[in-house]
Length: 299
Image (cartoon, rainbow, N blue to C red; front, side):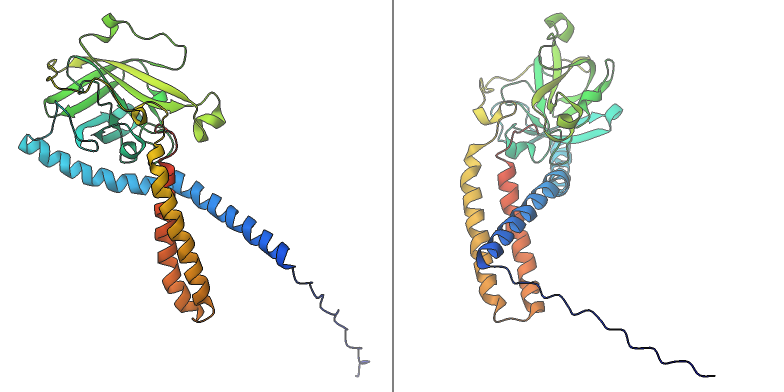
């Protein structure tokens, strides 16, 4: 049984796209580059910076553990910024971190930082510890969830101390009285936002968690402590001194991009990617890390 032959289907002619003009191509490249950089900055701020902080905490924990065993952890006088001075533990919010000396953006990129002109926790007076709420692992991201009565434990070169949370306050809230704080107290300082969106992405106000000493003997603060702190150590301050490293990192990134563009016409694709990927990643990492230190130190 035969069938009538069907006429072959005619395929539509391919649509030829008109090439972009040089001006439009340049616009597309610039917009694409800016979008890629914005995406990288977003990923670094919320994810990759946490990896950097986690590695720093691992190194600091080893230094603190050996320092406590050898009784070399400083607790008085002028302490070099970045030196581990205490271990902070708040079980109710899952916080456990090594505290370094200093509260600049660079110091807080490694973990919580002790305000230099305040006493070390456990000493007479009010000690202040700053911590980030969004970037670099967000160690203080849940400080606003603390409730009155929660226990904060701090280990320093002078012993182990327990503090009971009095309350968490924001702008305009009353400050605890001297009687409530007692002879030795602790304040955790971080950032928050006025709304749900700002609290998670763009904090714009300072949050304080006040606590009073309930276990451990009050220690006397040694003499020779600083009586003031630089502007970069104050709440929500960025470090403008990091602008110079950012410029050098950007110059290196542009120079590497130009060199790789020249290599594109001479190398195979796999050779280009083998060299370009690690170089560009390292330069992007350094540039973004330096730029992050220009942002508020509590974010």
